Length: 371
Image 1 (tube, one colour):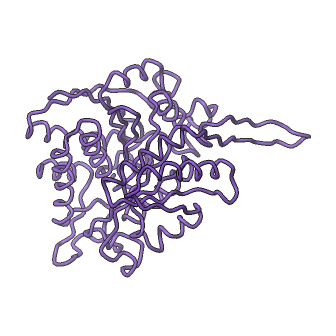
Image 2: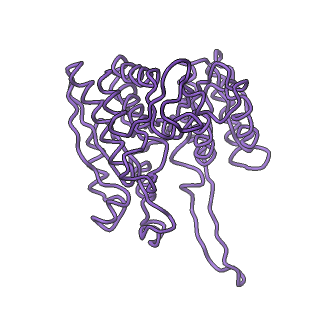
Image 3: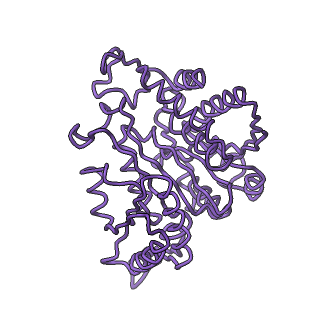
């Protein structure tokens, strides 16, 4: 089979981690007789440098013509990069928001899975970790505070900024249905996260989720306030299966979830619309401080490519092959610097396995070889 894959390498470590994901995809193609036709798409700071804007209309049309899009990371150092001296609508992240909206990528799936081999990299106590945890954050991605009307103006002599959080019942219902559908394929539990004790948008969110829940009698569901959820994630992450929430809450909680897996470099992500099309990216940022050093962890991007195979191409066996290859490399003791044991010393042992620190390209090579 042939598949058209748009590739947004982006900024910072983006090109480095995307290169390793493509290496693994090419190993899959060779093994299973597929062909992935890659088309480069500019977005982010590199697009600003080349075109003056973070995302062109031409780039959007190119993305729409693909079967799926694989992305690295965008943006730079917000304190020093000239990109952040531009107006907000011309900064790198504005391109990502525009792409999500243009492609109607309303459902963001962020799994947080703790590999047993990475328990030593997890900041939680061993009695909390137990046998590990496996949860998925289902984040609404095209509504809420990030897409509402905003302005900064002087009011009675005082500079005042306003951001508007808006959701309608249709936006909530479609993400809720997606969350419950995913739960049916997992452990059949949904935790809907809101701030219904304060926000009207959250009260509507809770009302619609309760309506959707009636269509899924097999799924156990509960409501949880976002501040409590943030606490529960570090207190007892094993209690969660699917965490369903709105845009900003999902952004924050998914980063918290990533760190209890050992590193944000392990957290993959899929953003889906109502078809098979999806945008697949690591949850971490562009990490400009380590760009070009060859030490970035590409595993999140590689696992995002596996999600692409599963959700956009229905290649479940191939996706599992990548996931198993990642597992195997970790079992063999290979680590990038971010997932080394706390002492960060190569040669340390974990359950009689020598821990070996390797760089970005080496970990990609090892995973591709095991595919």
